[in-house]
Image 1 (tube, helix red, strand yellow):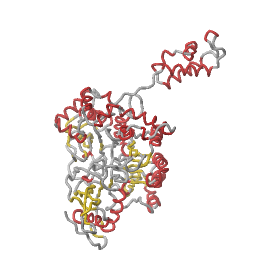
Image 2 (cartoon, rainbow, N blue to C red):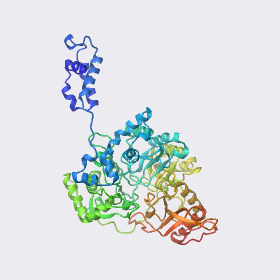
Image 3 (spheres, rainbow, N blue to C red):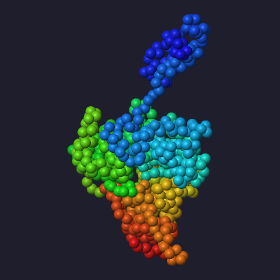
Image 4 (cartoon, rainbow, N blue to C red):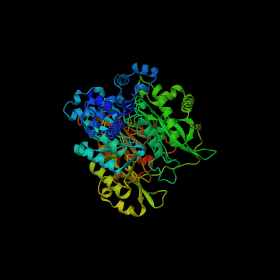
Length: 631
């Protein structure tokens, strides 16, 4: 009351304050207060009050009047019938209704402050918060494997990251030691950081938002994940579309609240399940559009030559089902404005209409099949038209004629600018130590203007390297004396691995360290004239995308005889064969071999080498004793 009385007596026009957010109100109050007289009459109750004191009183009054900025919730965007289905839905859906997950974007900082102050312990936080709701902030509890620790998944649209951010990641995880403090490049051109505490995760998120225009928000559970684009965007003389501005625009559509300007967008804060978007830049399809919920495939218009996107939808991998995307029969101009409208339409239809009861049927493909492809396309068209943005949708355009061989990303390659080169660096199993992160950042600063590009094969590219500096780069100790290399060969260079049992509670087998050791053995046995892609995944969720691999190993039960002649359970895998990527890529749906023991690393290396010889033209490096194996 005192603050308000003084403010009124000063003549400050505080009637405008409730319409302002706190910061503008503070600026208004200070400006007006300092323009007032340096003292007030005795009637005001303030004798010879300095201007600063008046200003502070005015600020206090205005802030008391000004409402705090409010954010909508994810639930507020759902139609009534969707809420009803969620109320009758699965456990996760009911949990999201009980406590809106979008509030985790502020609760994260509250939890962290209380933990730092000793007022809160993990055991005091609700289970749904720890194991579900915090995933909306990108923090995933990994308590089963690493008690009290979280993994942070970021959002790095188009996989482009700066050296200062990479150093920040290294500084953040360094205190956790070499076993916990590691970073993984993912199959979505992204980073996952291991070993974080909740309070460290909150601090990192603040820094990412304030200084790096990056976020971890909306990167896990029922959210639209990192937007994948071409790692050669803007570098390639054969690209049809520069995917960078498009991937950034879609990332903002998903994760930026237009009303507050803050990261975390409640419009997409209550989806039925995860959702993946990939934007391809050319015929190589480095983004793997055919295994994404929305895949944008660049195609010139048959009549005008204008480059646009054919839309494919519904691709995904899970325990219950693996599905290739299906053509939607639509084409639109390849610009960020049109892309956002089409993605928004499909996201809205999925958000409001997706299955909320059976999580295994909660992916987009099930909704497309329920409605029928043609009807779904009609609904998308109608939704886009309802926005009134003038976005042009036409029938899908024919692909360019002739075959196209997918180009390699590892090694040294020319760019559109003849004076520059792109240099692809192999990162075994996608895993980087603190020291390796710093090496990558240093190399980027010295040779690539501070820029690093991640690939869906879990490797990285240093772009825009001056042609006359390539030899110096290739002599760098970071690329010649450690795990990182520019020319790893065709056997190990395209190895992909999921997280595995070291950190993931769902994995049946360890993958990353095992894959690196086994593939080194395979590399000592055979060589090949083209890349042979070997993928490892710890469980049927197939985060390692084994169905897309030339050879894919999926964690599975297996047995072998022990010394007493009795069958005992050992680590094993189902082996898939013949998946393809690039233009016209297809998945291998059924295992080629089942329940193969992998506990003997020499033995499983022999199995993989044998498959490479038989199916992919590999030949022996040295004479080795092959392991006879059949299933």
